[in-house]
Length: 305
Image (cartoon, rainbow, N blue to C red; front, side):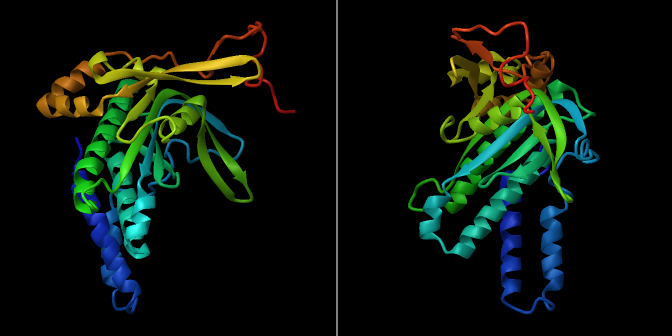
């Protein structure tokens, strides 16, 4: 259960941003207390918001495996806003929306890994929770964000009677390889996996329309039938091989209605289901004129050197 509504998170971040903007136009010293108080209130629930605490200790070259849900939120619509709002107001809205989205993910136990332009990447899953609890938390977060941005933020930002911002979400569950990459002290811990790249693609407008949450086959296999719908497959070709993955739409509105009607029953039904897979690190290969041999797969298992 979320501690604060999305409306409250957004409003707090927006008002905090206005305090900082006013302070930047006056004496920083005289408004230092107001600035500090605003920042503390908007970020108190999110110390060290970026990264995953289970893997921050990895050194460059070290790796660790986990089974987690990768979550991408793609925020759309700022092009239109940029034509009708002053830059400072546009920045206030983007910052407030980003802050509220980060705090929403944290409220449901997720870990924000990085900012992705107009959006965020998060991972649900750590050494404390089960895969089922991880998946349930990710669905809760998706529904919470969709409802909050669609019904609360747009109600405040509506321009000309239309939606000011829109969002799309991509999610998948599976095995992730964590590693610290970088050089000369400029490094970052990143989750590397087909799961990561698929979830990222699914959040984009090319694959997911606004107000849709699209999930891969691994996570979809756990979601009950009344909360998902079949979607067109994700397919691509490399040489003479065609790769394909099943995709589904997570019905976040049905999830929200079920949660409001009886959240305890919804939780019981979902956590009673076993989340096991198929947890594949490679897409299914179809339509190949040269079926893969028993040896290493082309590209994926071959070293670069």
